[in-house]
Length: 359
Image (cartoon, rainbow, N blue to C red; front, side, top):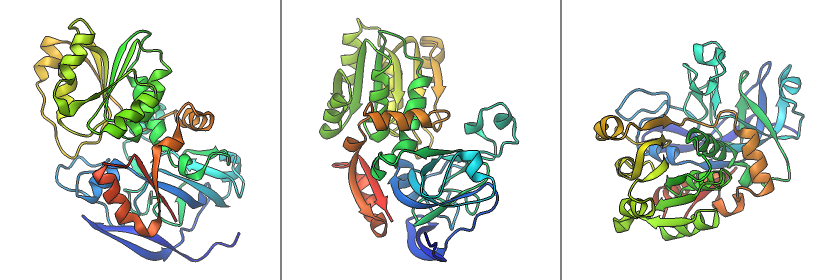
């Protein structure tokens, strides 16, 4: 296909200052891939960044944006050009559909050398790093040399293929929970990733799988995705309900996927002694908790969960075979030029699950 010289792309210029502009289509070099973006999701972290929260790769507490940059890290694209060696390295051909893992590792730091590439010290994340890892809210995007790319079966609809990255994150978080047969598992936050976590946790055969959220339509989806019980936390009885169901001990595993500070303290109250707490969310700022609960009172295992390392092939397979219901997760599909509307829909969350933009 003929590749144009310019393209439309959303560009970040500052907090709440995003603009649809005409810019040059990226040029590629050896080992690089150019794709025509087919679909791109709006993530909760995109919404938080739009409103000025800190982003991944930054230790700063004040609002932090790297501008100008094209946002977007949940995507699928059609391969339109391959740099020298890229076809052989990634098993890709022109016309294939492909996804690139959210982080582009440096492959030189301690973590990359140990195979822990998702914690790369340089930490180039698509959609946040100017020039080095431009994102997917555009008509075309470049997968840099060193990126981790995967072919995507064309029978997976584009809007659902844009879910591969968040579902890989969901898989990794569930793995970090180290769920054992018969465990009581609580997952807080029934956004698209939380719902994906429910589907994946169900595969671990927990004794009781509990979903928490504020919104009735999300709680209903959680039941459809495999939750045994869905609790509306706005009623203020969630902690007591979990304690009552577990003879007063509390849940074995708690996975926090809300991005809301109170959910952290809630989890510490409802988890049993020697339980495992998984913190997945990107919070808009610091969250204070009573650390004596973690140490002196309960001796908890606290596990962070970042990105979706080694999980993309499973995410692709689960979306393809229906173990994760991608169709039910995509609530809105909008053209790229309506990106601000997409951000607002995702921000409100009252009727949405996943908003997908199509160039």
